[in-house]
Length: 236
Image (cartoon, rainbow, N blue to C red; front, side, top):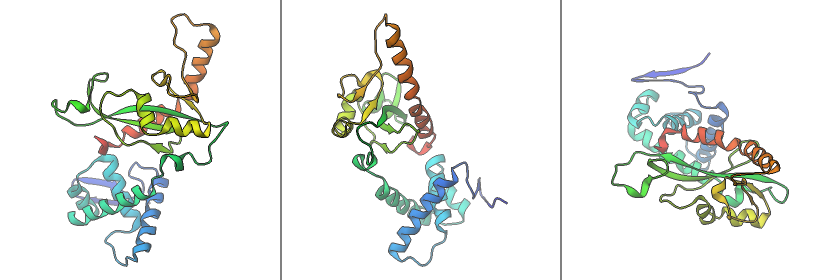
């Protein structure tokens, strides 16, 4: 039987709330470790509920007073939960070199970038994308062949090419040093010796066309990652 929290204008299933149960369990374990380090004895919510509270806030972008009412805590307590859990997640997040640990020559990853739509007024020109005709932040993502994203770059602004962003974040140099094969789109042409991009010619031989088809098939997992990434409404 699914326990629920039903207070105020929200109605949340406490088990999943549309989120993967493994994700909630993982975050709750990180919260539990932090509480043990601080030797905290009393909290309004348990570790699982605090993790669920934070993930619902990030995924659905509900306001803290609304979530606080739904979980039966004060707004001040909600702010404290958010700040603590963000610190826990930030400390746990691996860096670029840590994310690629275990990968080397003979392995391959997928590198691509996307624009996360954000709410900005027309005067914020640095956030405006002429290509997409909307405001947004650019994010570079590394994706493993199984569809797992081990690393996301910090958000950036401005009309810089993706290959330049890859160099700025150290992706090109790190993959080149470890001899990791990188599958990327045409905008990354010239990024580095280990980057493989599709051929671009008006009249392509059959083996070029077959290479592009295979290349697109192997790069398919990054689109699923972007779809999941953009479902987190807090990014707006």
